[in-house]
Length: 232
Length: 232
DNA sequence: GTCTATAATATGATAGAC
DNA sequence: GTCTATCATATTATAGAC
Image (cartoon, rainbow over all chains, first blue to last red; front, top):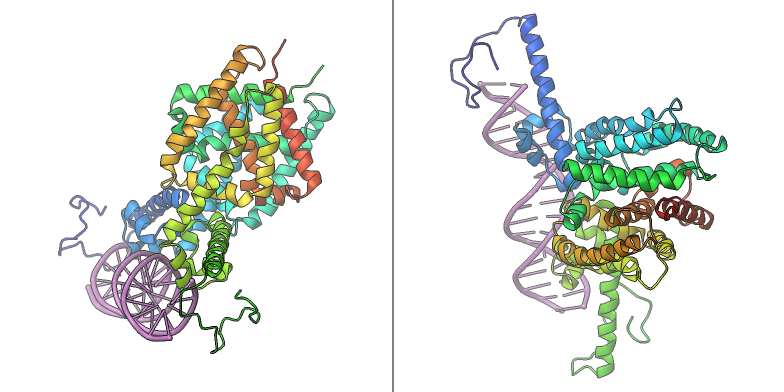
C-alpha cells in the first residue's frame, strides 16, 4: 500500500509517514488506482450477492464484508445501497447486449444466428451472475431499468428485427416472426444461467463442464436452426 | 360477514350478538369457511407481492394490507413470514408441473409436444405470478425448494426423458437430447411470463392480448416443432 | 480515506386484553 | 379470532474524530 511499508495491516502502527504537505503526482495517481480497485471490488461483491438474493435480500454489511471493506467505507465509495445497485445494473446491461449488437447483416443468416447462440451461451457460462441479476430486475418490473429498456434495448431490437425481416423476405430464413425468434434465442440461452440449480438438480451438470457446454450448444443450434431453416 | 349484520365495519358496534354458550354446528362450519377464505385471501396477496418483489422485498404489513387484514391477524393464520412464503411456493409447484405430468405417451409425439407448448403458454398467460415466483426462487438457489427439486421434479423429468428418448429411438422425433428439449420448452414458454415487462417494452403487447397469444403460440410451435421433426 | 458512535427507522414476532 | 401495545432486532445512513 504505502511505499516501503510493512505488509497491509489493518491496525496501522502509531508511527506513519508524515505527508502533511502537497502529495506528489505519483502519490495521487496511486491513490486514484487504489480507489478504482476498491470500487471494482465492491462492485464485484455486489454483483455476486445482488444476483443471488436481490436488492432487498442483501445488506450493505454483507456486501462490505465480501469486498473486505467496512460498511462505512463502502458508503464512502457509493452514496447509497440503491446507487450501488443501479451502478452494477447499468454496468451489466452493456455486457448483456453485446452479442445482439454483434449480430451483423454482413454474415450469412443461419451462420450469424448460429454464432449468436454460441456467444450468448458463453455469456451464460462466463457471467451467470450478470444474467441472473438482469433477470431479477426484469421480473420485478425493472423499476430502475425501465428507461433503458424503452430506449436503448427497444431501438436495438427494432434494428435487428428489421434485419431479420429482410432475411425472411429474401428467403434466407423460413417465415418466422423476428421478435419471437429473438425472444426464443434469449430465453433458451439464458435459461442455463438463470435456472442453473434446476438444470443441475436434474442433469447433475452445469455449463462449466466443457462437455456439457458443447452438448447444450449443439442441441440448441440443431433444434433452433432446423426450426428456421428455409423450406424448399 | 355475520348473518343479517350491517355492512362490514372495522370498528364493530358496541352491541354484538351474544353467543357465550356452545356455538352451533352451523356456526362452526361458517367459521371454518371464513377462516379458509381468509387464508386464501392472504395466500393470493402473498403470491402477487412475493412474485414481484421476492421474499425480502415485501413486508408482512404490505401483504396484510393487500389481503385486507391486520398484520397481527395475518400472523394468526400463518405462524411466520417464511412459512407463508413456503406455503404459496408449494401450492404453486403443483400447478407449474401439471402440463409436464400431462405429457402422455399415449399421444402422437409431435402432437403431444404441440399440446404441451399450448398448455405451458396458457399457464404463462393465466398464472404469470406463479411463474415469476418460481423463477425467483430458482434463481436464488431454491433454498426452500431444493428438496422438491431433487425428488419430485427430478423423478418426473427423468420419466419424461425416458419417454422422449423412446420416441427418438423409434424415429418419431429427430435425434435430439430429451433434456435439452424439455429445457427449451420450459425456457421459451415461461419467458413470456417472467420477462413480461421486457416483451411489453419491445412489442407493446402481452399474452393477455388474444391475437398476440395466438401469434406467440404459432411462432413457438412452428420454430420448435420444425426443429425436432424427423428428417427423412 | 477510514474509523467509532449513533441516529432514525422498519420490520418480524409476541403478550395479553377483549 | 382480533385487536392494541410492545419487544427485539436489523439495517440504512450520517456525524464527527483522527
